[in-house]
Length: 115
Image (cartoon, rainbow, N blue to C red; front, side):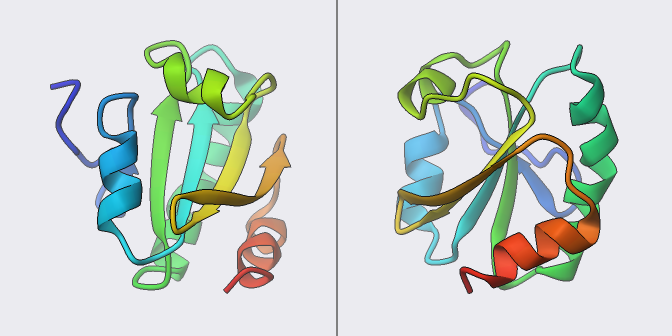
């Protein structure tokens, strides 16, 4: 199912190399992408925060997760070298990024500064 837009959860979309451009082109909302990997401790710590933020900002932003081990084109294209890296896109263009674990409050402020 690599090309399909499946949900990682109810509010978080699974984004991959194949659907990245389509997701960016088809949504009018800002898109928050969590670049992560299974082996990454801080990625596991921030995963529930990403879920909470997706719920909190439902209808205001689209939230997605991109596994850097399974998808290498997009992380390379955007120069993602540390994970977790959270990148906020507007109209398909990167507007800001946050690297490392952030609390729900910190991530909320990060998002709100661009809405």
